Image 1 (tube, each protein chain N blue to C red):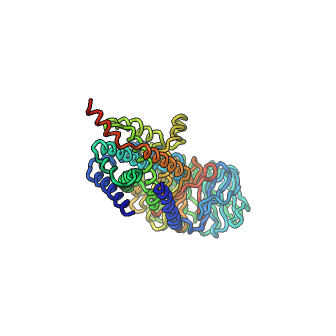
Image 2 (image 1 turned 135 degrees about the vertical axis):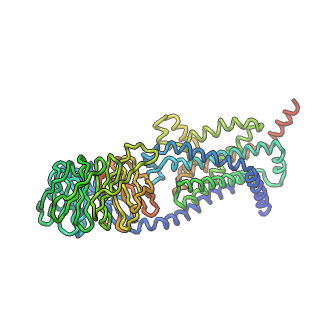
Image 3 (image 1 turned 120 degrees about the horizontal axis):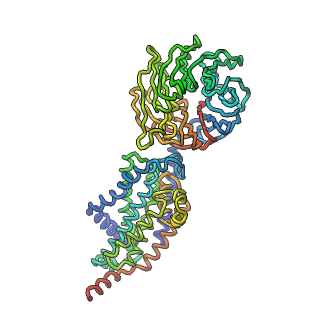
Length: 334
Length: 267
């Protein structure tokens, strides 16, 4: 059967060629050297993923129930809100070790760093306040009362405005960081989870979990909700569509919204607010992070315990990387 | 050597011409998998969005999963259709014309198989193009990777059809082949559901599917479409193809149909 063996041999030739060309096609994938930090809520760890290999290269032990993360202004440290320890753990980004910890008040969930001052804003879910910590002096600067069960925090690029969302009040509270007090309260959808500013600071996007909406708040004049984006994934039960994490590209093109147990990330046109697409990711997608050049979007999938990598150009999911149990937050170090 | 190529060209062009002229057959060959894709798979969109299996690197919709199975389905039906046409050729006498040529019988049969395989590959690429526009896209290189996998699968199902045609005396008996060969082969494989999912439902069906060479053909195509080589699947499909080919060539009896006809005429 000489013909057959030729057939079999022919099968492997294109295979090798394909392998070489396939490696070429993957080149942009391995070009970046970023590190992705993922907080595993149930494991009390931070998984560190190498952006080039897309593999977990390190697992850092932190306090109990790590959730929100933020970088210090100089980029040397990673702050992690460890809810059950009522503290902010600070990780040295050189050694990848927790070097210190600062008390944060009860049940810290979301944190944001002030771009101008050494301040960390902390939403204390059980105390109905936003705490302001000085991470250099290690002191409590002030406490700002907000609604019931504060969760989401968004800070404007110039650091002037802070938006705090409260789960039970269904409100977005707009805080003037010069006065350190709330100046506006706006009703949004049921159980607001997250707030994110556009890169020009003109809008704050506030997601609501139960309502499955994103409210667009004008941050220039009226401070009112100007538009509401609704999500409805075809073929998916309505109650599983829950809006949570938001990321907005700096070029004003896309907004990405994590839709919880519907296992989808919505792609929204940042200008028209039209939902362009839904991308399938892992189970119960919670938070999102864009990398520095905004070529990739990383998602934490709480129930399936992995991170999905989305290619922003083609709007397709490239790969899912297993991490720890119940990954909650994600942040990318350039 | 030139004589051999001339013969090959003759057989292949006859098969391709026959395929292209039978427009309804071309449409029917595409409609079947497309209905599965647009109707059946659309209804099960969520079914596979909950687990990750190789070679997929992330979560996929069911309609993405089912594509390699439908590619296998196209080849399976086409392989059977080719062997059906061989029974027809035998009855009509054109097979005898082919077999009186001075070339060895195994060569002529291989030419027939290659011709049938090429027809099925044309169908597969048209189907994949439609799927692409529907939004189901594999890595671009994957479409090149599957070509050798399609050739091997085409030979395997073609050889199976040829072997069956040696047992089928008349054209009319072919309906039985559909029921007893094509459907079990397709449904008892990983074409519609991954093996782990079948195992959850029935261990017996899982075991049968694990022994079904068509499962490995589908997996070979699936991995190739995602630029990966499933060595086990390739070996199993290649070995099955060799065995079926040997049996088909050794067992092929061009006189069988004619004899049956003669016998029938005498009744």
